[in-house]
Amino acid sequence: MSIAEVADKALVLSLISGGIALLLAYLLNRREIVQPGQINVQEWESLASAGTQETAPSPYSPGKTEMWSKLFAVLVPAVFLMFVVYMLFAKFSPVIPAIEGGNGAALIGGTATILLILACLSANWKRSLHQISEHLVDGLLFAFRAMGPVLPIAGFFFIGNSDFATRILSLPEGATAPSFLFELVQMGQSFIPENLFFSAFGMLIIGMLTGLDGSGFSGLPLTGSLSGALGTSLGIDPATLAAIGQMGAIWVGGGTLIAWSSLVAVAGFTRVPVLDLVRKNFWPVMAGLVASTLFAIFFF
Image 1: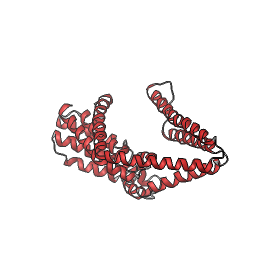
Image 2 (image 1 turned 45 degrees about the vertical axis):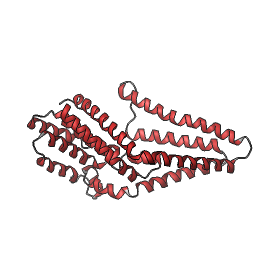
Image 3 (image 1 turned 180 degrees about the vertical axis):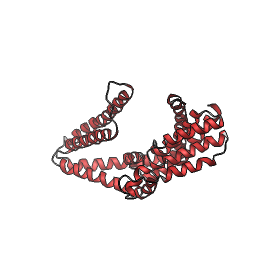
Image 4 (image 1 turned 60 degrees about the vertical axis):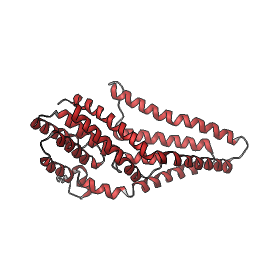
C-alpha cells in the first residue's frame, strides 16, 4: 500500500463527499440563504449610512468613504489570495520556503491586524485608535462567546488523546497518559465482521471516532495500520480502506462536524454560532461520507 495510491483514492472520495454535501446543504438551507442575506444587507446599509452621518465633517466625506471602501474591498481579498497562491507554490516547489504551524497563524493574524489599522485610519484618523481598540475587543468577545459552550465539551474529548491528557489530568512530567479514545477504537476493531461492506463502514466509523479530537490527522496512523491488517486478512485492497478511514477522520475532525476544530474560524468569519454550523453540516456531510464509501466499495 503506497501513499500515492491512498492519496489518489482519497482525492476521488473527497470530491464525491464534498459535491454531495454542498448540494444537500444548499437544498436544505436555500430558503434561509436568501432571506437572512437580504436582512443583513439592509442592516449593513443602515449602519453604514448612520456611521457616515455621525462622522462626516464635510460634504466631501461620503465620497472619500466610498473611495476607501472600494479600495479595501479589493485590497483585503487580494492580500489573502496572495497568501493562498504563495502556500500553493510552496507546497509544490522545493525552492520556496513553506509557512507552517504557528508561523502561518502569526502571518495571517498580523496581516489582518495591519489591514484593520489601515481601514480605521482611512475611515476617521482622529478616532482611529479608539476604533481599533473597539474592534479588537469586539473580536475577542465574539471569540469567547463562540467558544464558551465548546470548551467544556472539547475538554472531555481531549482527555481521550494522550497528547493532551497529561496536562488536563495534571499528571507528573514523563508519566504515561491514558489514551481512552484510541484504546476504545482499538477494542472495537475486533467486532468488525469479516465482510467488505461492514469493513468499509467500520473503517469509516473508526476514522470518524479518531477525528473527535478536532485535528483530523491524529487518527491517520491508526486507520492506516488497521487498513493494512484488515485488507490482508480479508483480501481487500488496503489502500481503499485507508482512504475511507481518512475520509472519516478528516471530514469529521478537519472542520465540518466538530465545533472545536477549524470550523470555529468559519463561524467567526460568517458571524454564525459554531454549534449551528455543526447542526446544519451533519446530515449533508454524513450523506456525502456514506455515498463516497459506497462508491469505494463498488468501484475501487
